[in-house]
Amino acid sequence: MTVLRPGHGPGTPVRTGVRHRVGGRLDALEAGVRRDVVRLLTLLALLPLLLLLARSAVRLPHAFDPLTLYGVTVLTGTVCLLHLAYSRYDDPAVRPLRRRPRHAETFPALPARPRVSFLMAVRNERAHIEDCVRSMAAVDYPDLQLVVVDDASDDGTADVLERLARELPLTLVRLEENLGKKGALVRACAVADGDVLLFTDSDCVVAPDAVRHCVTALVRHPQLGAVGGHCRALNTDAGLLARVQDIWYEGQFRISKAAEAAVGSVTCVSGPLAAFRREAVWNYLPAWAEDRFLGAPFRFATDRQLTGYVLGQAWHGRALKERHADSPFVREHDYPELRWEVGYTRSARVWTRVPSRPSSFLRQQIRWKKSFIRNLFFTGRFMWRRGPAAAALYYGHALWVIAAPALVVRHLVWAPLHLAGLLTLLYLSGVVLKGCVWGLAYRLDHPGDRAWRCRPLMSLLSCCVLAWLLPYALLTLRRNVWARSAA
Image (tube, rainbow, N blue to C red; front, side, top):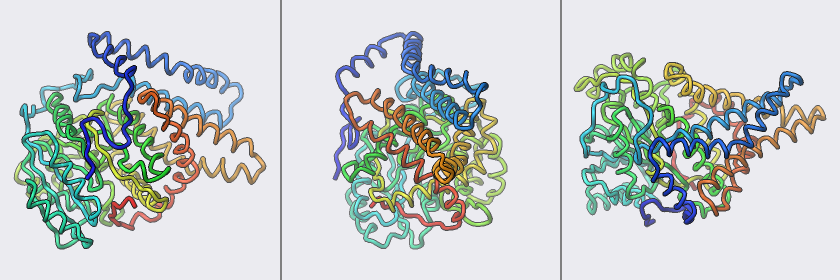
């Protein structure tokens, strides 16, 4: 079994004394002064990028060129993400959020120590399920209900869970028929009695203090309907592919989710550690379990879709509840549709097993692309209502993902065929530059850790391989297979 200390774990570098001293000095400042100092430091760090952006923007009207426009757009988006993540993000488990929502009095307060139902669904994870369940049982939160659903495993997982249920305070639900992850988790929710519903994945290990940090964030900020934790790779010793994903995960959470959290609209509370207030999701669980897309049941988009119900219920919640009015999740208690915010707490740590083989990695990425496509047709319908910054982050990212295959074809296929190799070289140079910027951000957070050099590799991988998966995912949307193996 993997043993973790609070705040540490596989893939988590040890911070240096310099980092501790700088962070301690900032925390000792008065809140307003601290924020101004952080903004100034962020501006200084971003100054080279801002100068490069200004130089490119000035030249653009005089010598218009699609590649320059593309570069300016990508650079602008990168600068905005870094600015929000480093100067505007506050960890809601550590300090009060500076955002004050309108009609704050409409959000009901949680008890000072709410009951937490810690839920997990598993299918065929015999090799790793014990580590996950034991880490769930070892968290340092007192009022905890553990519920695990075995979704008709046939590899011996059920035997491991039954042994653990005899040893640990665990409610085990065994399903004879495979329902898929969403259906299995709804079965777990049916026996959950907590004020907070907290989910993890069957290939994860949770830090002992992770639940406490999530609960602290929700209790301190009643406007938060959901909050996600910070995920890194558990199996970084599995090879270069796993290490590259670990650094990528760090950036996706520390920068992308932090930027979204700065405007109260994290669009995907990721499955490894996802905490939801009961009032924010309870009435939408039947819609989640029975989600259909293009006329067929859709078994992906688990975390994205549930987050979408929290973000969009003020506009679509009533219709969803009416569609499932006969469900006990709706009939027994009708919660009001509120304009919840969704946050992210960097201090709540979790580690997940990432794919170590290219075939498994590609299958995972195809599932994620399918989730993106499906969620675009739900969350995309209302994100413009959540304010200019939230809308810009969401639709800008969506346009980037959708445009990526066309950009790759133009620069990696069309250009070489038309003897425009310089265009290909410039494109790849821009991709590597962006990866280096993200890598340097990683090094800023983890001084002395040389793993930042893996980040440009992930940028090249995204450009040369992953961009091609979106059209394939679109063509194979009907193929619904749930498998979490990272082998």
